[in-house]
Length: 342
Length: 95
Image 1 (tube, each protein chain N blue to C red):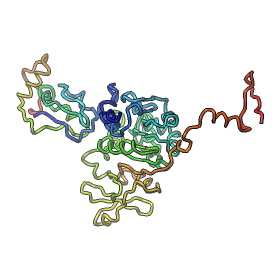
Image 2: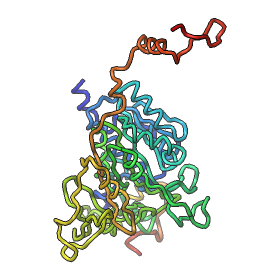
Image 3: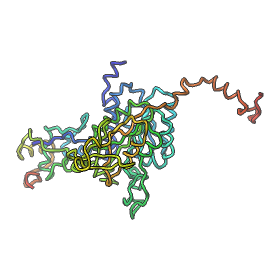
Image 4: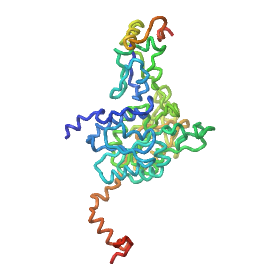
C-alpha cells in the first residue's frame, strides 16, 4: 500500500476529461498544481473528495480522478462538512468562486470558517461572474463596468481573506495564477493543515474581466506591488528589495529602506501568531494604496470540529438520549404525537 | 530557431490551441514545445502564435536551436501538406 502511494503521480489524479475552461484561464493553472500536490500528501487516491457548488471553478470535480460532488449553488460548504463529519478519514477539498462562495454561499462561508471543520477551501476570485457571462460579483471593484453595472459598479467589494480571518480561519493564504510555484507551496501546506484551510486564488478571467489583477501579476510591474510572505522573515519587497512594511499604530505602512528605517524596523511575519490581528491587517492591504501580500497569512492549531464528539455515538446511544428526556416524543400507531412516559 | 517555453509558464493552456502545427503539449509543471514540429509559424503567420497569445511572455525563441527561414518553411510544409506555399508567405523574418 505504502509503495503504491509513493508511485502516485500528477496524472493519476487527472480524470482525462478535457477542461472546459477557456484556454488562458487561471483555473487550468490551479488544476495543474493541485494534481501535482495531491501525490505529495501521502493520502491514498480514494480518500480525496472534491466538493463544489456552481460556477466556472466548480467544474473542478469533473477533471479530478477522485471522488467528487458537484453540489447546488453556494452549498459546497455544508455538503463538505457533512462528508467530513461522517467520514473523518477523507481529505475533503472545496472548489468555489467569488459568486458561489461569497454571494449565495456567503452565509455558509462564515460558519465554515468559525467551526474549524477539517476542510480545504480553494476560492477562485476573478471578481466577476464568468460562467453566466460577465455580471458583477461581490468582489467586483468599484467603477468596473459589467453587464449588470453598465455605468460602473458602485458597491463596496467584499474582501474574502479578511473575512475568513475575522471569522476564525486557522489557515489563510492568498495566491495568484501567475505564480505557480507559490500555488504548489501553499496547497501543500494547506493539505497538511489540520482544520479549516482557506486559500484565495486571484484568477484572471481573460474573457469578462481581463487584466483585473494586472498590477499584481504582470511580470514587469508586479515586484513593486506585491510582497511574498515568508514565515519568520521581515516584510521586504520591491524589485531591488528596497522597501519594507511596518506597523504605524494599526496601519501597515510601506517605507523605503535607508530613508524610513532599516530592515530591522520592518514587521516580521509570524504565521503561528495566536492573535489574528496582524494577519487581518496584512490581508486588508490593497492595491494601489499599499503593496498586496501573497503567501500564507496565518496557520494556527485549534480544536477541530468533530474531534470532541469522536468516537461518534452509536445508534443505541442516540436512541437512549432521545428517549431519556422530557423533550422527546413518541408517535402512536396512527402517527399522532403521543407523550413519553417519564 | 524553434521556440521554447520557459519557467514563466503558468500552464494556463492558452498557447496549445493556437499552435498551427500542434507542437505544444502539457508537461508536468509547464507546457512544452516539440522543437521537431515548431516552425515559428513561418509560412502561416507573421508572428509566432504562441508568443502572441501567452499572457506571461513565456514562449520565447530558443537560441540553442537556430534554423533558417527556408528550413522552418520546410517544417511548415510537412505539417500542412495540403497547403500551397509558393509566392509570398507570412513570416516573422520579413516584418
